[in-house]
Image (cartoon, rainbow over all chains, first blue to last red; front, top):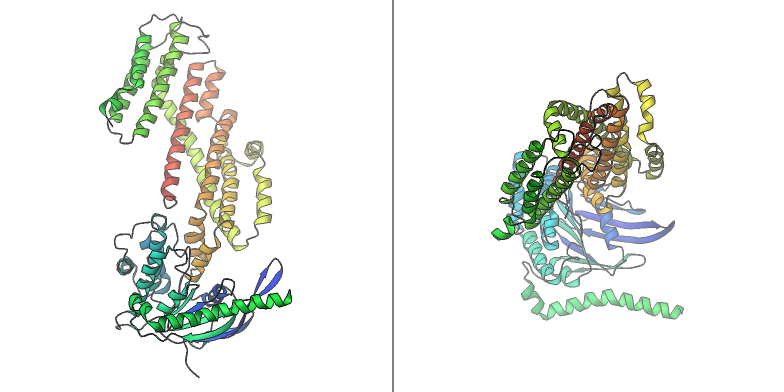
Length: 272
Length: 306
């Protein structure tokens, strides 16, 4: 047996809406190795966010198991840090207080007096030096997500779960944030990389960041294919997108995503 | 702001007009205390004039000057109708100078009564808030049975708290404690209802965000749900506070031996309408001051909202 950090096996999730049960995920299985960056992509409604909320511990599966370090997952846990699309930060706390609060929850060894110092360190890392006293509402969406990333990193969890963190950000800032995350995650090799599960619908984002991409198919959500990303690290967007391999790889992912959709439309026509 | 905009304002003309009115001969048969009125008007004008040189925002300056101007107009018309032309019955309508004089005469008694009224209000209000907020948080959060609790709250809050007074008198040893009890009831239900509706309305994404941080139950209640529902809680508190003043003064008129409601009732029973009007105006100022301070607190605690 391989020793994956996260092992998802035959995961089935049902959603109940208006008293009807929907099969959101069906027999989903894949593993995430320690220090691996895995993206989950798929069309909207494929259950990718549902998958993440199971990993977050917010939603209980109907069948199958999720194991972390070989132990079955039950509920939320401080070994996992989360960045959501919205409201990762509490609006009534300043960015510094938000980060301090996160540190307090996950790192019991850190003294109260040291929390502010660590918070400021991470604010600097994400380019928010001097914004510690601002409330989230005083920051742009991009800056809020920087602060959310700073908190997740300051919490120093082994696993990072990111649920479309950049989807609500404008195109220009999204690229900047992707590069920031890439830089922070790749690091300088002095520390082990964190294990990341990253949900997105942006193919380029997934390729730039990931070691491995899980492509989901919708209704119900199943794993279409797990693709290894063949590009060397450290990666630079400008260098990467110029290469022919990038175009080929991107097309392959696109066809995995859209063949599925095309088949579906074809299938519907047959029914009609 | 130009000097002209800052100092050449109609309010100052109204001040001069008010002084000129005082030059007219008095026709009232009663003493009118023109000196007290002039002293008050000059004092107000000096304070406003000095303050206006420090105010930075133009809207704030205009607000201050407009309100002051209104006061000068009221005082002018009032003294014309009473002291100067004696149009109104001078027993029922004392001249403004007389009210001001009465206030300075009675100020220690008035102060004692204000302290008594405020003490009662604050006691009842704080006890109610201290019970209603945690209870609302706890019931709203743990059960999430908003429906039943909401109907029960609706029932109790639909009983006008003043009807508890007779029963309160039977239950409690002193009239003071009855007043505190009634204010407690008047504040408790709106604050409780506000807290519950706040808790039930907290964005699920905020709760999820707290859950993934593995917060403890007390942290969830007091560091997440409480601030997230704070705006609704303040709505309830504001409602409770304004009802409290109405109730308190009413209660004081029924059976108390001090407080501003007592002051007004007591002297109007003796036909001393100068003191009655003094009392009314003082109550107005006290309520405004308390509401103002409470709003300051609210804005401070909710400053994270845009």
